Image (cartoon, rainbow, N blue to C red; front, side):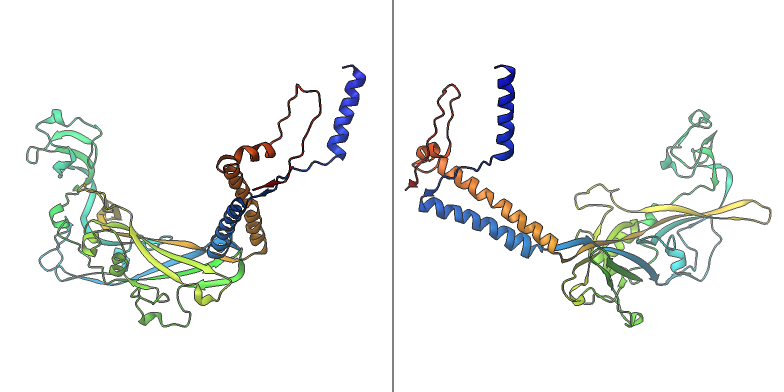
Length: 410
């Protein structure tokens, strides 16, 4: 083919691609069984898309994840009879008479975003000052029989670096630390919680919005003109009294054990979930909070004795008149409540409806694909249908031969 022929061929291809129109060949099959099967496929697809995806799942709505804020406030006072001493106080000045703990004592820290911690058990080591003292807890791998076992400045699991001296009375190494070191009586700790907080109450205020759907929408989990002072949520048909007993929150946990005393002894992490699923096409009466709880620090599959629980240490510092620094070390066991806000809102959107309808029309093409599979591979006349549907072109044959398929009858 010379240059002229190539140019003519390229021009013809360009003209054909630009100014000519191709349409697919349609083979009309007059077979009632195949026709019924094709319509059945279409009805199934349309039923799923319109019935489930659009109507049941509200595919005609735009949606937005809930946006909101949560605040908490604890109330409750614990009375402890300290006559004869307080067993969970180590190295502390003897206390006689009542010991009273209020929220300023057991809510640590005073405020957290979307959570609160209630101390229910404790071990307190008072009047610690920095110096050299004996490691009191032998479980901290500080046992010794002589100075060779107490390598100076070595890093160990304990309260501080070793001094190189082995105490002949306790047979544990001396350390540089806050003295006296903590020596918790775990038997006393495991006897049960020291703060009986199951009847303490928490006020959980929650406000939500869906600004992308309706900038004027605003909802709260309490009634503004309601009497919050005289309500306690029993979790049964009282969604707008946001004052909960801590024991009621724990009782919502589906996992075992959920006994409040068990959780309060060693501590736990509990998630309180507030769910808002709101249809903004309906009245505000249909947009209500739902509450549920679950435990995070352990699972029903945990069998180890040390699984679960929650505790941490914090200290309070001060100086005496001589300028010597002291601290009170508190090992706090308790329940950390995490308030989780979930849910979504939906509102009618013409654009979302058009997209769903377009998806429905596109998916109807699956009915044709399934029907073709039946026609070409299942029915008795599949070989005839195959010949009429596909036109085979042999590029070795110079003749431009094509045949129009007849109208197929059953």
